[in-house]
Amino acid sequence: MQNNIERIHFDSMNTCNMCMMELENVYETLVLSPEEIDLLDMPKRTFTVHFPVHMDSGETKMFIGHRVQYNDARGPTKGGIRYHPELDLDGLKNLAFLMAIKCALVNIPFGGSKGGIIVDTKKISRGELERITRAYVREVSDIMGPFKDIPAPDAYTDERVMVWILDEFERIRGRHVPAIVTGKPIELGGSQVRRISTALGGVYVLEEALQTIEQEMRSPCVAIQGFGNVGRNAAKILHEKGYRICAISDSSGGIRNVNGIDILKLMEHKEQTGSVLGFPDTTEISNEELLVSDCDILIPAALSKQIGKDNAADIKAKIILELANAPTTLEASRLLAEMGIMVIPDILANAGGVVVSYFEWIQNLNQDYWKEEKVLERLKYTMTTAFANTHNICADEKCSMRKAALQFAVRSILHAERLRGNL
Ligand SMILES: NC(=O)C1=CN([C@@H]2O[C@H](COP(=O)(O)OP(=O)(O)OC[C@H]3O[C@@H](n4cnc5c(N)ncnc54)[C@H](O)[C@@H]3O)[C@@H](O)[C@H]2O)C=CC1
Ligand SMILES: O=C(O)CCC(=O)C(=O)O
Image (cartoon, rainbow, N blue to C red; front, side):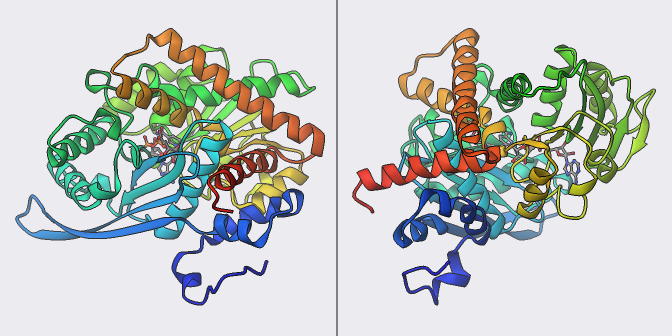
């Protein structure tokens, strides 16, 4: 696709190639102009910061952090903070783009962003983690704010990290600003349900999807990759609803039992040993084996690019619920569609996290806190409405859910840009 602006310098610098490839799937249906394509192909802002932190050993180490603000036409940018040794700016641009798309799909008034630090949290102490987090906040605080850009948890960050972000930001501003970050503990302005909302939102759309398929599944067998915030809570909710969790994994590997794994006991085991491995009455499998194991529902809930062209053809699940962000490559997505596997895409499946983050932000701004029932009811309504909007487009256009969701969201973002006079 030929774009209409001078790109020679921008090209290698800022274009999001993964986003462009994904958007190409909907260009034809949406009949976009070159200006619209230009606007969508590139993040609005990217920041990279390089900062020193005193380590426990007495040495000073330099760290690199990023924040990408992809699009803010629909509202302040919103997106998680990820800590990972292989974090890269291109991947973050794609994740920030997915946030903008996700917020538009579930119709919450936010744009999309994502950020993080290149660090292996398994190799640093709690004190080092806190100093690294606070130093990052000092570097990016100017571009953050409750009406600018609002961070939240993502892989390898949690409530504790959100509290340090809150505290450091409030020290810099010299006043309380609870709406600066979401995913906080309830005692410090967090929302009811946020801890489990990504998983619960995914379960709501999964159950909507199950009602649309002809084949009835009795006690479906579920394989879940990842046993962190999202994977663990999805396993717990589904287990309590009577699904059989037949396989589950974390970064150390996976376990399998076709008769179902007792998730509450597994949570205790992981707490005590630090891993899912060695859980009684299960056989060990690798993460690769888990993805292609016999199951009805496969839930990637760990990292990106887990399902690619090399393993997609071997997948046996009938439904894939993408709770991780970007767990499937575009090539694999096409292959899975040809195989007739229903993929509930990340932008819909894991949107429950940012939906309850939005509720948390509203509660913080109003200083008025909601009961659990209200959060649950509004989460369910938001997720099932987004599912219905996506499913209606799928039915009309006979396309994948990913393509349908993307179309809906791109239309909404471009409409906001047009209303602002940017197009
Ligand atoms: N926390 C949230 O609210 C949201 C998270 N997500 C996405 O969900 C995914 C998981 O995030 P969290 O659960 O929050 O992170 P987490 O840090 O709590 O857990 C990550 C899990 O992935 C496992 N893992 C890491 N590498 C692995 C590998 N190679 N194979 C198998 N498992 C591996 C870890 O052992 C851990 O169990 C990420 O893709 C994240 O972007 C999406 C929306 C919201
Ligand atoms: O809760 C949020 O604001 C963002 C969560 C997130 O990073 C995601 O949905 O990928």
